[in-house]
Length: 484
Ligand SMILES: [Zn+2]
Image 1 (spheres, rainbow, N blue to C red):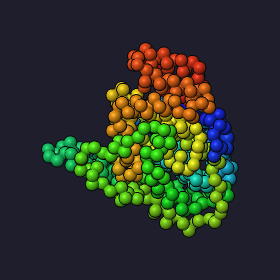
Image 2: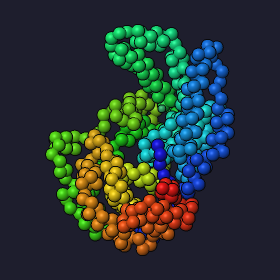
Image 3: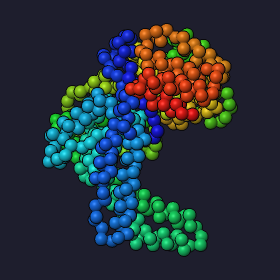
Image 4: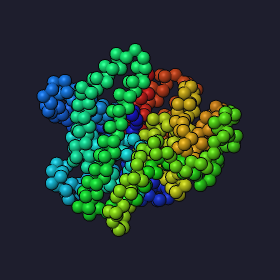
């Protein structure tokens, strides 16, 4: 995943708008990106991570080392690629949960695990092994209570305690150097016919035993997680699994009012025809969005949630849940939206903003992002990659409203998109916008609307931005355009 950066300015914005959200501190700085923030830890980790010598068989040990080193380079690559950020407030909140769990379970966790915040919007967390876990922004935004978030964290901590990541590497090394695997592979190579079918069988056998193993692991991790939580006095509710089950339906939520209204609210022109698919493809005509009340289990981020719910519901605790502080959810949501934007996933990005508006959130930062999305779309059109910027999502995952917005992004004529862009630049909300947001506005203006479309011009505009906004979350985006 290659993504972007932070928002230093949200604070000022919220003060000026109706305080739906109390006080938001600045979003992460450019310096909080993992390639900078975790550089030292990364270097020392790389040195410390040497494969244990556990196999007498040379081939197995060699394979084990290979797999072990793959994990190290995956992890260091993720740090260098800025998959992680260190926003102090959000980090401290999540890390505080870990501290609570660790202090109540010292025998199982003598050393406090290392936490990383992953910029991904996917509702997930993961255990890397070696006492490290990562929690995605998507999970923080999705979680409704501290207890719900704690369950996922405790689950990942349990994977590490039970050395599941390490065991998986061993099993792979053992399988890939086993006689059984060699034999079945040789049989494939020796056979004159149906090599592909035979090869598929070999792979299937392995992935079947793996998934069986992993399911077993999931249930072990759940059981231990519940124990860790009980000792920490953090309430467990089996219903959290059912909530996780719905993690993939964020874009299936309908909007409160038609897509058009969100544009008209800024006095922007809007034509209904933009949202109606012009092509007469069967696929678009026959589809009934009312049927999509869920996602099939095989497509889910978290399959088997119902089973996990049934297995654990007897352990339910009656307790009042602790809401996640509004400023944490707010910051995580903004960082997530900014990162989607930087990755040019424009429709999901805007849809999240519209859902926010549906909640009554009047924070002008979202208006600012709405503008950025329209400018971004026009810029992409100018660069002839509009389609890539739309971030098309399969119908199975989206609502009718989402589909209309996506269709609008596909179909709005170039001239009218330009018009939207220009009118957005004169909208009233800019008046009280902080300086770095205004600076980004003029940078995006150059990208999208400047008559001079040369790379030199863009590079100059990028430098003008980065010079004055060296700490800004937006710096990461502008930096990409500095050298052309
Ligand atoms: Zn798991």
